[in-house]
Length: 133
Image 1: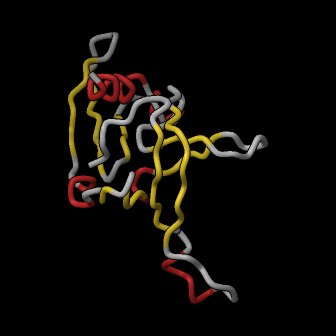
Image 2: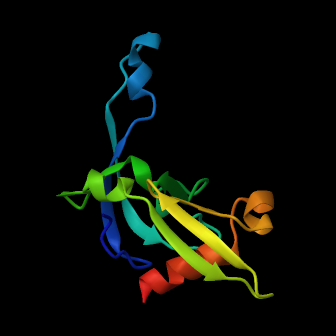
């Protein structure tokens, strides 16, 4: 499980390279992991399964990382088993409808039409805000 990260916290992450599983297809060496250092950047438009950290590149000041690929944070191993557990939440909608939010493998989905259309919704954002408090 990821530790509680706050905006501006210094962080070093070890991230699994998505190309590693198909490394035999490349004519050059593919590293198994990448290491990134910076400060945590929290923005409300990030998906629940994403983590933003600063870079030293003025052209691309923030790197967004898929939390599912994070193996290690600040030299602390991230427990892979906890990330794979499915969690289901029943969330009331603003017009009386009831929606189900499922968090699986660090990714969240919702049964509402807003999520189906945009890939994010206020129901997922509400769950994330409740986890932060």
